Length: 257
Image 1 (spheres, rainbow, N blue to C red):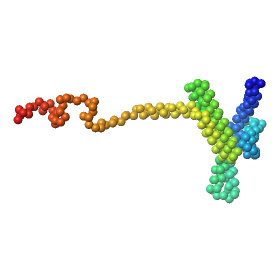
Image 2: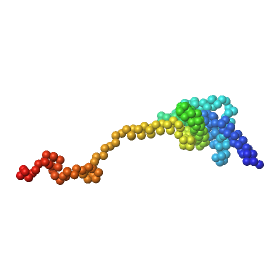
Image 3: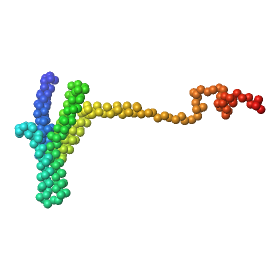
Image 4: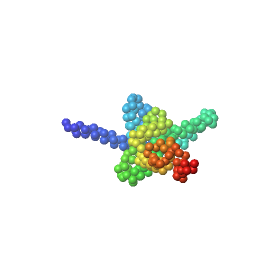
């Protein structure tokens, strides 16, 4: 049995898994997949692998219900309704203004948490589009493809973190999980082309500014006559107070006496 014949079954299986991941990725990144996967993971008993499989199967099952855009934006209304409903419930329970406000803030975080994948992914895409365009324009299609890959990896990392966070604590956990997943993935793939370019331009500007600054003049310290390289006048009498006076040097003091 050849090596190729051994590799083919594994490659085929890996390709199949890859297709499933690509197909389910939009719901995980832009839709409500993180919440659905998190709920399935919470309801499943077993180890991390078993729960992850349950979450992924639930994510795949989302494709059977309605259009993707409807699933992606289905929770946007919760950003407004959840704080209001929480505040009303606190008021009905006899809580004062502070209690109602606290409940409203908690409801807001829950509403944002349920929409975090969609909001975060949309903001990431809007931020990365100019970066991809600049990289492609200045460095060619190869650099543009690299930037697309980096952005895609960050989106996938954020979605995975959101699903894990949702499994631990729906709402706030989804929000924190997305940011942690995106941050960790960003550390792996590195900074974007625009970020590296900005840092290089800033370093160059600082170097130019430093080069243009006047250099401080160091005052001479010590006796100039102790300089071994200084030129000396053999006719110069350093002990005479009239050493620099030519007229006094030409006077015969014996004649004056």
